[in-house]
Length: 110
Image (tube, rainbow, N blue to C red; front, side):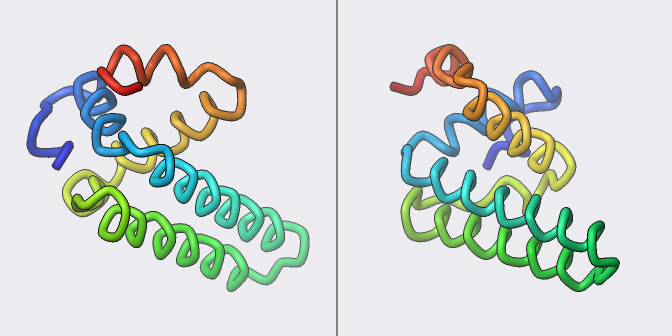
């Protein structure tokens, strides 16, 4: 697990990427994060904060299922929830902007 192998966020980030080595796992994370963003945005627009909670729960359900069923490891969020959430958002933003490839290569993936 990423949180057990690094004492710095920079080190955690590289291990986090290795824990998401399969493109299918990353695709599930992108889907989950998108659900969370939509849920939070809908909550802001409607004032119904249950939508944010539902979006976040859908996110974690998809993410954790991908780890257990596709990647075959445990989610980093179990041991380092803040760094894991930040790393997930970072991975998502780098993917959206087309800048994830160099980071994956730096982590020894692809």
